[in-house]
Length: 507
Image (cartoon, rainbow, N blue to C red; front, top):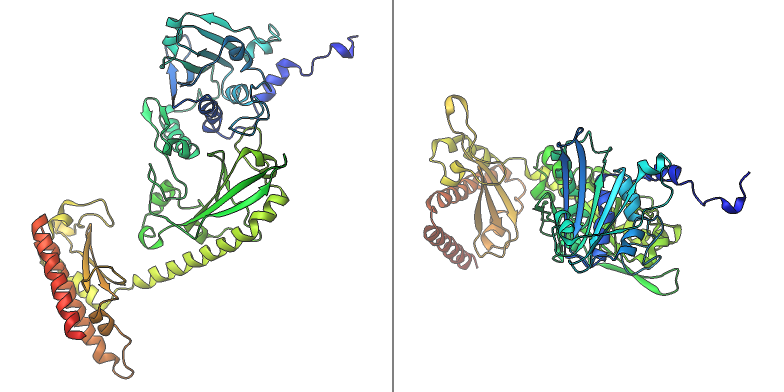
């Protein structure tokens, strides 16, 4: 019978197999742990490579993450694969805390992980962890790191110094198609590390630079852009468990219903609009979760797809946000919810109501007037504008073709809008749709489109119909005549001069 004093804290072979199922949601969330380590090591560039090697008896999936950070010495290289070891254990000033990320994330997708590292590019070290060696009982401790020639290091590593982590025997990737997998990774990693990418750091996947993806649709990157900030950023001073205070920042954005409602369901799904309602939780500049957080009693509805929110905090509030050790999930405490939920629920309800109202307005504006219907009925008899024939990147696209190849006419829309332009109308050709914006602030539009006098609706309806056809005809002529920059400018000056003279007459 063995003495209790000789019992190891864990049974290594069982522990490693259990660690493989530690709950990483995706390959991207596991790779994020390694990229966190790279940026913590002061890297400015990280490369991720997915390979399927066919040169052995059985094809092998290999994943490599390399950086140009400060690198590690032999002892640190060895210890980096120990569960729970960290040179920054429980520190609150960066990404990691517990020393679980590298071995845990690696084993979630691979049975062997190798770490190559160099601090100066002249000497290098390598260490490894092989789950099969522990499972078979041939090993109960990690092998010591060994030094390797710089030439061998450079065969694996694309930078002069830094660290490469190589996953081999990736049994959980063997049945994956790398093309679609890489596409999903670009989206996921671009979103998780958007702040790092915006700050100038680089991540490449199979040689292609990642672009940031903003789930709030506000900043430039690889996704749709066009949302507007809703209200000022909210800040909360929160007492951290360690005793100091820390700042939580919350902001909201509102998606443009009028511009994006006509996107197809496929486009909305691809852009992340449909069924994408929620709050992005950002810890130390990296997204760790996205979901329906701090909404109190408000239930999620379809109209909530049209706004987004982001909550940013630092690691000293990890306990209050309930950050898991894999940094891919939060479970906020009641205390944290009590601080954020009242304001966030109220704003969410306001934004839901605004989205609902915007859709009602859009629906009402889609009811065509008689003048719009008449213009569309006869437009195919008129020479089409060059831009509508060649097509542009806009809705609804180039002119439609009917039977026997005949080209259909333009679509027409008259919209009232407050414009900074001095013209009383402004034409905009968007693909095969001619949008004519009537300037609500111009005296002519204000008088002509005022409420109809009681008892004279039929008379005014006929007059307004003819007036709208007059304006639609002028707008149609302008987009046909303005074929080059100079002629467009002349037409614009004529319209503005005409509008100014008309405003003077009506004053």
